[in-house]
Amino acid sequence: MRLKCPLCGDRDAREFHYRGAAKLMERPEAGAGEAAFYDYVYLRENPVGANSELWFHELGCRAWLCVSRDVSSHEILSVELADAVKRGQA
Amino acid sequence: MEKMRYSGFQVLLNGLTGNKGWRPMWRDPTPKSEYDVVIIGGGGHGLATAYYLARKYAITNVAVLERGYLGGGNVGRNTTIVRANYMLEGSSQFYSHSLKLWEGLERELNYNTMLSQRGCLMLGHSDGQMDALARRGNMMRMQGDDAELWGRDETRRHVPYLDFDNARFPIKGGLMHWRGGTARHDAVAWGYARGADRRGVDLIQNCEVTGFRIERGRVLGVETSRGFIGAGKVGVSVAGRSSQVAAMAGLRLPIESHVLQAFVTEGLKPVIDNVISFGMGHFYISQSDKGGLVFGGDLDGYNSYAQRGNLPMAEHVAEAGMALMPMIGKARVLRSWGGIMDMSMGLAHYRQNRH
Image 1 (cartoon, rainbow over the protein chains, first blue to last red):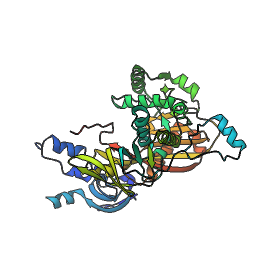
Image 2: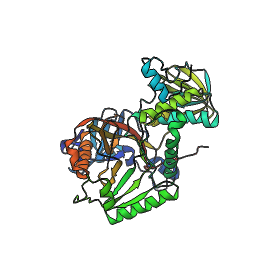
Image 3: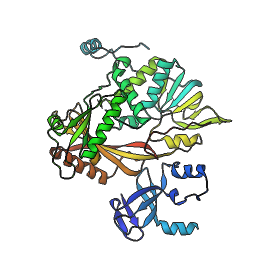
Image 4: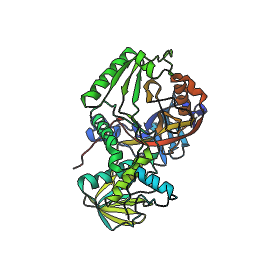
C-alpha cells in the first residue's frame, strides 16, 4: 500500500501512522454533552467501500492527511491535507 | 434422516466397506415462514448459539442463516488457539467459561474437534514483566484456571531453541497455562452444526440477509435472498460484517474492522510442543498436527475488509520470529491469510443494554 502525500509525493505506507476515522476532526464543543462525545469517541460507520481516514506522515513531512481508501481492496482513492479539508469546512 | 453416531467402530466398518455408509452431517432444509429465533451467521458463534439454545434451553424452532457455507467465514481464518489466560473483568470470565466448554465438547458433540491442551506460554523479558505475569497468573488461578510461573532455567528446559540472550528482549521466564492449546477451528463449526441440526435447528446456507422488518421497535423478521423469514427474536453473529448487518437494523456499532494476518510454513518434524507468545514482538507460534509452523503477529493497523494484509506486517512478523527463534529462518512460508476482526474502540468486550 502506498499513499500519495500532497507535499512529498508517492510514499510507502510504512512512513505513515494510521489514526482512524476522519470524523475525529469534528470534535464536539466542550459542553456538547455525553451523547455527542459517546458518538465521537466510540461510534463508527465502518463502511465496506470508501472509508474517510486520518493518516499522519510521521516519517515524512509530518502533515496530517485526509485519505479516502477502499477498505475492501486497500486502493487509495484520494489524499488531501487535513488542514485544507478543515479550512474548506469552515 | 438417520442419526449416525461416530465411533472407532464406524471408522473400521466403513473402512472395510468402501466408506459407503457415511451420511451427510446435517439436513439442507427449505426455510420455514417463521421461527422463534433466527440467528444470522453460520460461523462458530452463530452455530454454538443455536446449539446451546436447543440443548440447554430447549428452544429448537431456530434457524441459522448463512450467506455462504457453514464455517466459511472468519471461524476458518484464525490460528486455532484456545486459552483462558486473560485478566480483565468481563473478558476473563468469558474465556474461562469457553475453555471449560472446550474441555467437554468432543464427548458432548460426538465430534473430534482435535482439542490439544498443549499449553500456552507467555514470555517475560524483564523484572517488571515477570511481576506482571505473576499477577496475571494469580488472577487466573483465583478464578479457577491454571497458571505456572517459570523462571529462566525452567523456561529454557522446556523451550531450549528460543534465543534467551536477545539483546533487546532477553527471556527471563514465562507464564505457562497448561490447559490452553489448539483446536481444529473448522471442526468446532461442523460439530456444533451437526449437534444443532440433530436437535431440530434449521441450518440454511446460501441465504443472505438483506434487511430487517421492524415495526414500532420490535423485530418481526428478516428479509433474505430466499424471501422473508419471520422471527420472534433475531441474533446477529457475523464477525467481520457486524457493522453492515447492524446498519440494516438502524444500529451504529462502536466497532472498526481490522485485518489480522497469519502464516503457515511447510510441514516439519515436531519441534514446538506448546503455543508460545512473544508479546513484546507481537508474535505467537505453534505447530500444527501436520507439522506446519503456524504463526502470526499484530493487526495491520488500519480498517480493512480485504481478508489479506500488506507486506510491512508480514516483514515485521518474520523479524519477530527470527528474533525469538532464529532457526525459524530455515523454514519456508507456504501461505498466509488475513482474518477480519471487529475491534471495539476500547479494544475490550463491549456491552450495552437498549431500553
